[in-house]
Length: 316
Image 1 (cartoon, one colour):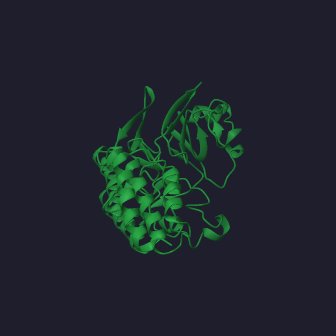
Image 2 (tube, one colour):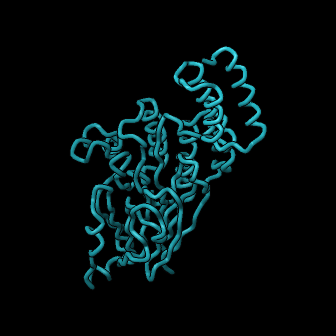
Image 3 (cartoon, helix red, strand yellow):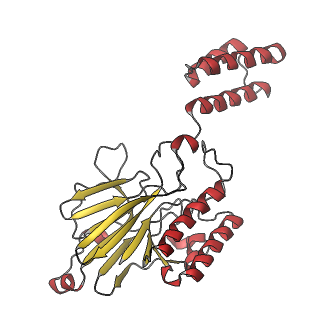
């Protein structure tokens, strides 16, 4: 039995800052179709998704329509892949506005209504697998202390927890989360999401897997987009990380620091032109250089020339 796991799609019609895609919607759809193609071509039995499918609970209609077209196409091609077993993501994405107010209006729940997604808490696959989901609005303690009795343990060969929760590979992070070193559980596998950086961690008898954000949104997300194939065999539970062929190198996805600095300096120029900055030219020039922390001679000279031109016509 083979499963696919991916997470944090963060679908949106709007391109995130610093990304340089010509068509961001096309970029996202290509990654989604690559995973679905793999599932169809390799006889995958089920797709698992860790949450945060949309970046906003009410994405642009045309983007939602593109997603539905993709799911409709692949459901006709391989009906058993649907619904995709999914977690509900964080309050700022799938559940923006709170769980109580989102059930009718959130696009993520429309996917459930269309039977593309399923948010059931627990499900089993014969006697092979028992899957438990932890949605973002639920507390970790709801599954942390859950135990199987001896009879249940004999029924299911594998136990997986899929959690939209801030699991961290270690406790050395400047933000809150659950350290995998301190989380003791009876699950064979914990499928993590929400934390956008990939990791694989083995703690005693439990393996923690996080593929990271599928469509990189922030410049600190330097990983290659990927998903996991999880195989449940007579020998045990095996997994393999698959990097997307459509995933480009970092430098082809995000603006360089040099380009970012140029964009920042353009903002200064616009403010100067529009009279939003009341300082004299010399003070503004000094402030902009310090703010941008520019060491690049080419960029620095370009700024000097532009400011010199503006100083003639705009200097107070």
